[in-house]
Image (spheres, rainbow, N blue to C red):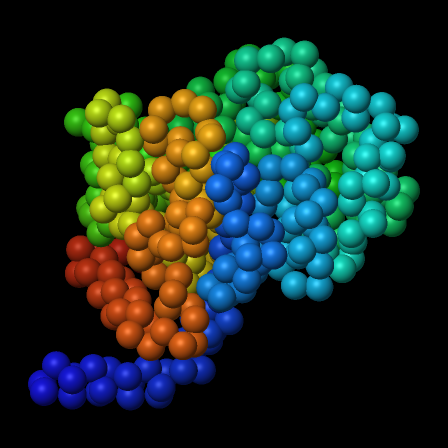
Amino acid sequence: MATFIGRIAFLHALLIFSFSLSGYGFLRGVESLGINYGQVGNNLPPPERVLELLQSFKLTKARIYDTNPQILTAFSNSGIELIVTVENQILGELRDPQQALQWVSTRIKPYFPATRITGIAVGNEVFTGGDMTIMANLLPAMVSIHGALVRLGLDPYIQVSTPSSLAVLSESYPPSAGCFTSELAGIMPQYLQFLANTKAPFWINAYPYFAYNDDPNGISLNYALLNPNSGMIDPYTKLHYDNMLYAQVDAVIFAAARMGFGGLEVRVSETGWPSKGDTNEVGATIENAAIYNRNLLRRQLAKEGTPLRPNNRLEVYLFALFNEDLKPGPTSERNYGLFQPDETMVYNVGLSALSSTSVDLFIDLFSDFFSYHFSNLLSHPGNTIAPPIYYRY
């Protein structure tokens, strides 16, 4: 009875704060949170069912790894913002402006604006893929695709960028030491200039899991999982970091600043944690995956920015929507999904709390959210968030 009364009292408090909660995104979905919708599986639901799944959890942004016409058609008039991808292997063709114009005219224009395409990812992790030919084709293809968007009047609505892995950095610790590898010294300034000219973001695939797996004895699991912890203070900026993801993002910002582009926006195009792995994949457990993604959702609900840019909400795309059984590589690669192909949850990350019909989960996530931030406050009672700092070198 006491538990029941306590939950009723807590629900009453939720109702009192309902207006402020809507500001945190509970009632509208999380505006800065997207999901990566991969299709490397032979048992995935059709796009129409995927759309219903996204809508049921109030997810309003998604990224796909091609321009699948079935998906583009299914997502028509749904309001979901969609990033599409140019596959690495066709970048050589699209460096030709005429080929790029034909590609945009047939792959993008027929679906827009009914399908709300907001970005084109030109390739994926090209800078660190090891194929010098594809890398040489990347920037010309981006320029040609953007030129085609301009010609068709679509450039105000659709951004052009390319997702990069964190391996583009030679240094990332502390964040203020962030710098790009010497191998990219020729192309990176041109790429950053393109982003600045077109007002497009730098997309980074950031996975604290990889760093922890490589050095589980040297890296705190709580720091990697976004759990409350003492964190670290950057010795040069004196900024406090309580999680690795934000440190990785700020390292990219510093690396861009070193090349004179400190004003670029950085967005996380992929991040996640595998729920299963091989015996040598340390930390790849369902418990850790649930903790990481649940903590990330809490921070998204709080509209957090990084310590370097606390007033700029960080846009993040979770990897991934489904476990994909045909992905090559270690076991972890097939186990990043929040959902099984039959649409059941791999684990409860708290997305159900975004549904107005899920009162219990709503209460649980609200309780966890405030417990989390209260524990952080107790850990750092004198900690204040510094204003944004932009360094140019």
